[in-house]
Length: 131
Image (cartoon, rainbow, N blue to C red; front, side, top):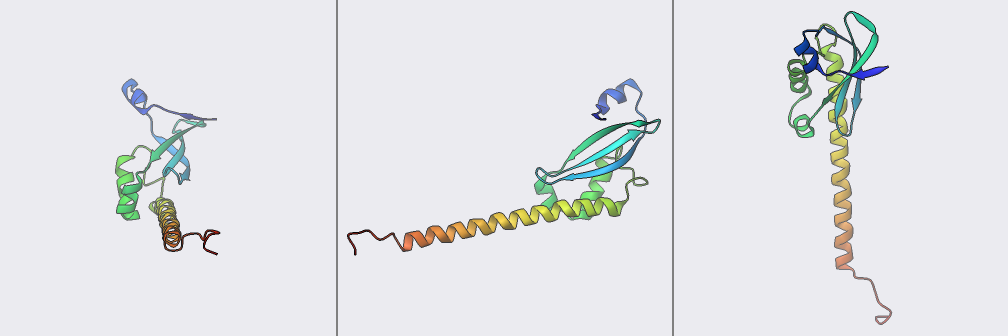
């Protein structure tokens, strides 16, 4: 069974122990990474932690920069000795590629609709009176 853990409460209680990530997951919309982990002394209980990623941040930065930021901001969950940089780079790259595809598809659809609307303006439908 997977549970959510409130780190702030654990930290204040003094019972914060190192986490051991076992799986990483990706969600594309909205973009996020999910880490499934267990505590060092309790491998039979699994927990999860979601890392929401800002779309604009992902578009404006390289995968290397995003991964470096994640290692710093999520240090408790992303220990470089346990979560390899290449694995995180691949996952961030997948999310960035998906954003680019979605952006280009939306732009393509917009341009197609725009052309269609322009066509309607230039060629109004014929009425029975004209024939």
